[in-house]
Image: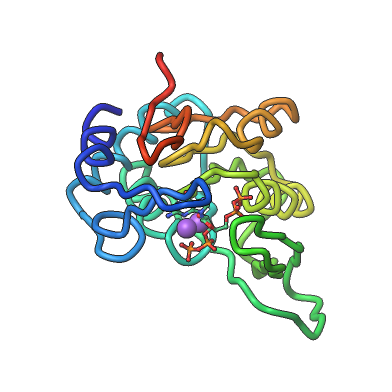
Length: 191
Ligand code: G4P
Ligand code: NA
Ligand code: NA
């Protein structure tokens, strides 16, 4: 998505450790017009997948997910992150390990919000190692739902997440795909 790539080139900052800081429009301050355009683009790409639920994780996934849900006219559910949990039987729980932050979280979704036969579209802001997306997919499948697709704002294609999700059979659509952040420079995948 050209508009997003231009925004990344203009405002993205490459941090050491292969991390792209985009807190001026995605992870801290947010750009609602750009967010809306991203929602339209996800809705367009997944228009024929019969999506009836959008799934994401707090916090930065919520904005692109709600815009997509608004355009597709379906509900959006965000998984909650918790450090550790007293087990309860009315929630789905999956463990997600963050390589970027080197910490383990449990993500939870109330059982009443996903039902067998649902076709869920997973949306997230970043795709790195794919742990968050796999965690959401496992919850959807635990509920008897089908993962209709995975929509990502910024994919770091030089890390393993996108390949692993595709190999597992999921349709992944990323609005910007980054080939490399070497030498403090953003290089996009040629498409
Ligand atoms: P994974 O889910 O693909 O395996 O990613 P990973 O665990 O490595 O990422 C952990 C957190 O770091 C996630 O945010 C993810 O969005 C974010 N992240 C990963 N790489 C980058 C990057 O290059 N730039 C930025 N800005 N974020 C990155 P989170 O912990 O869920 O936090 P939140 O922002 O949603 O609150
Ligand atoms: Na994030
Ligand atoms: Na995220």
